[in-house]
Image (cartoon, rainbow, N blue to C red; front, side, top):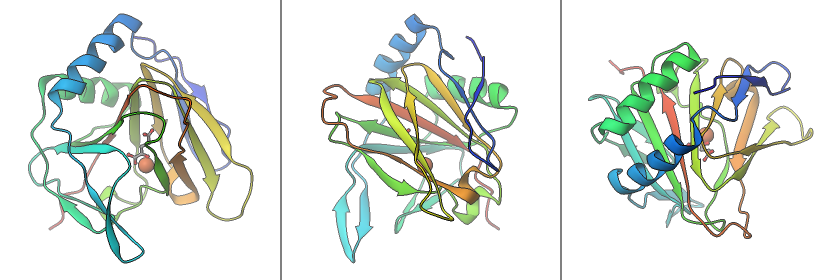
Length: 199
Ligand SMILES: O=C(O)CCC(=O)C(=O)O
Ligand SMILES: [Fe+2]
């Protein structure tokens, strides 16, 4: 495991990338285990007043009480699997924080995607630290400032990599995962989060 961080130059945001975070053989095994072990489902999104299938598969996993509201839905958490719990703890150490939930994303091929958004729901708190682990096919991930139509920063998220999105990232920037039709194989992404229990 190599947490050699590269800083991503985004003014006002603390973003760092560790491309070879997981050793290759371990990343290969985790990819297979998680593909099999995570209870993948198709979530529905509210789009222009209609419910549509999200262009990917998902699972919301977390501690009890970490319900997550997202795009017109409320998800109750699925329980931690052994592989996810172990990865959560290692990502927390690497990122210097704690996590109690993870949104797992499965992009079946390059036609699956995620649109522009910030992870800025109230239950994530004002300045969340989010850890994003990538397994499988490499995909481009993009940042764009919310304030203006400034340049888009593209980051290639590789097999076994860890992206740490810290202070300022969600407040100042949006991100997306665009379609890449030349990609023919799946990618798993895990975004570990801390959800404040709402009282
Ligand atoms: O798949 C990715 O790398 C991005 C996922 C993401 O932005 C999210 O789950 O909020
Ligand atoms: Fe996100």
